[in-house]
Image (cartoon, rainbow, N blue to C red):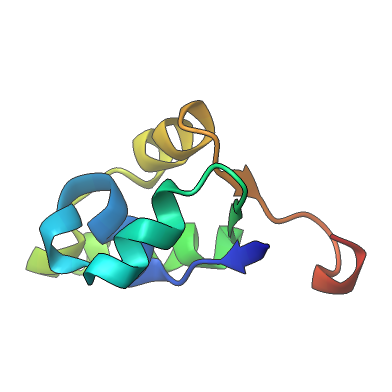
Length: 82
């Protein structure tokens, strides 16, 4: 199954997995699932980091690289074409 993850799930999966429910962790760890993220989430992180939000203190470029290195896929084009 494909899952498009929202911004907070991405942040928690990358840096604070204990904030995720057990059900969410199970879905994220299942190799049968395709985990997708959007550039919009990275933009949100960069903007809120620039505004000094304590819960967004992460470099969006580093996060993107880490997500890709860990098997997450960046959403490209229309979600219907994925």
